[in-house]
Amino acid sequence: EKVMTQSPATLSVFPGERATLSCRASQSISTNLAWYQQKPGQAPRLLIYGASTRATGIPARFSGSGSGTEFTLTISSLQSEDFAVYHCQQYNNWPYTFGQGTKLEIK
Amino acid sequence: EVQLVESGGGLVQPGRSLRLSCAASGFTFDDYAMHWVRQAPGKGLEWVSGITSNSDTIGYADSVRGRFTTSRDNAKHSLYLQMNSLRVEDTAVYYCGGGDAFDIWGQGTMVTVSS
Image 1: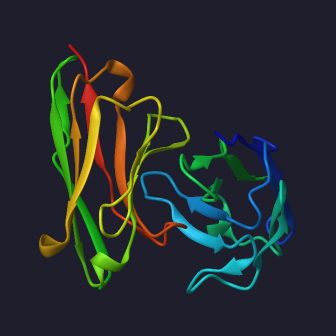
Image 2 (image 1 turned 90 degrees about the horizontal axis):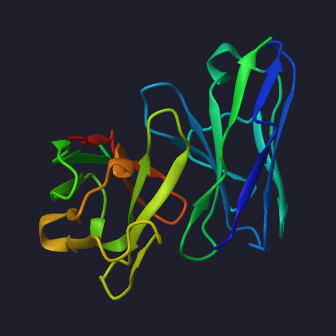
């Protein structure tokens, strides 16, 4: 089973600033990596797939990068609606695995 | 509208069974691999099970293998999760998701296992 490790657990950022979230896989997953945003009481929403491709309707301020074992989600110029929990997930093979999540909070 | 709607959750005693359903609409269901993902209260996401579009491959997390069974009926555009021998630690919101990167999610159904 591939273990996904996200850092930091919590990130405090001012609105308008940039946020950088990290995700590391215990083994190479090529670019089979997705990022999700989840707000309280809601289902997750797909932001990024293939490590760097934005899902339909996702604003350009969200960008993903990386391959192999190291991945990054960058949110430029944070908006109020961006404060949420972010999950990474590998879908290279079953069992799919998620990171433990990064909570992005307002500073 | 693309939609997944889960049902069947509720309160159940340890050791009992429950069957969840996920009804799909607005997309070509039989083109999609489908999955169950759960989230315990205050915790992260955990992949539970996946099934390929034609049901030829079904996978399970170690935590549920041998107790849970996933199936689908493409004619009814539906996904199912039969949960047997339920444990307190199975308490969670259960989501169905479509695709490999899950671009379609249901709203979730709460399963509470408690005596």
